[in-house]
Length: 396
Image (cartoon, rainbow, N blue to C red; front, side, top):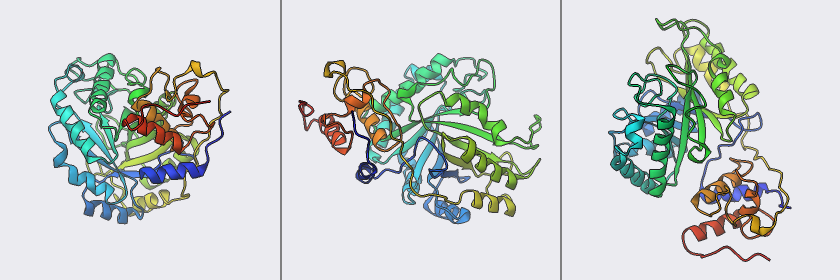
């Protein structure tokens, strides 16, 4: 039987990788990560000013990028997140393409160049392509007026993007799948467009309390009314969940109280949510965290840190099968060892997943055969992948 992982091993891996932990659950025992779109593309000064405004450092800095923009033109924006000890989240919008064009390779030259540039950058980047596709307002959305996009073309397009980056070796990318809180438009659904666990690192939801600001009859809605349906759908997948865009209007209710209630609801009733990224922009209405003094005070109080270190989840080991029933290193069950298996081990050691997506995954991941999954196995996998070893240690 495999021994349980020790916290010291987890910490050692964290220090080795220099990675911020984003756990599977956002329960009371783990700190909810806080992010924001600042209302403009991030700069070092802008991030520092926002941190001062909210009286807490951002964990996630959000920005937007279209497919006519190259990476070098936004590199300084990305740097502004990391210079302030935050992770960058890029919403990546292909305004010129629908999903059929993407899956057929019309944008491949651009995608390959972006993959190469982001790989060279080296730091972890959260990339959110084709978001809110269960709506009708984006050219890549299922409900869009062109009628060109279907569930199958969307999935193929999303996978095509990811495959190009993987083929270029851009393994520093975290892939974000995003649902709109509501299905809007013909043939839209929560479940039909999911690209699959092998193509997604984190699931996310976008949703807003519009209050009574909109002529289409918007109403004042609670967090549950906005997010529960999409959240319950995403719970079916073995991926962490976060709120990628959210905010409230001032008009139609009490925004300050809404913020307090919403954070309490997340912490008490949405254990799979590990982060919340506010859309702080005076746009369709004043979504900003400082749209009023009461709102700002409520937000600052709601995001106060209550803990410091996430508690990793330890899984229950499976009985040891005979060696010929699995391939050593094959943690995802596709009968071969590759970088995907290395990725699963990394997530396991970092506490981002509690089990492997395969019956014998834990046995396969114990590549040195000592009955324990730890940083030694991580090291052996890395050496085999980069060609410094031709095989794993012999087992008795």
